[in-house]
Image 1 (cartoon, rainbow, N blue to C red):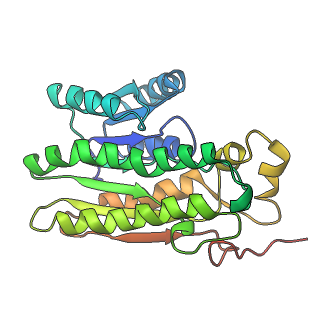
Image 2: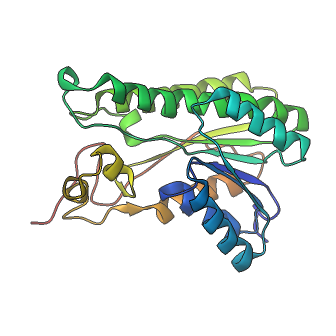
Length: 257
């Protein structure tokens, strides 16, 4: 039996990409789910499919992780309904813009910092005390290879993912003496809606990011996340970097002509 069977998992940003793949992967393992995203209509369709296919309980909510009051209210609702998760996959995040820093848009900075850093903080801060009180819990933050090595035009996005890496380390340290585990999974090039969002709907530019090699897909990253989450409770994986074979660091990738 899977170590995830019956363990409730909360996935933020679950309406697409890695988040959606995580929801599918955890449901297949028999884990009841709490799915958060801004696009509730997508969550509802996904939840209906997962309930029918895997027979797991799925609770959905429209939650924008940037809104602290909304996050706190949603977590309070989970506590009241006895739905506090055993595993949090802090996945909600994005890149906005691909410009030289001196040409970048401060509105893009705000979107990335508010989602990738403050959003992660809002959710982890609301849930962690409840996990500690229950004596169990695992926070898995989704970082990026950009948090290890900055690439040209990556500036603010890389800074937010470096912050995710530092926060994971810091929360781990502050949880010493508790059974709470804190991990980060850092993907490289993964073909999702990521580049389409970053390129602000420019489909041609987004597709070019993944041309000439085989990138990761959301399912590949979800497999790694499920592995980390399913390990025995005395095992805490601090950080996993996962890249397609064609990629060798944050920006070096071999492309076929």
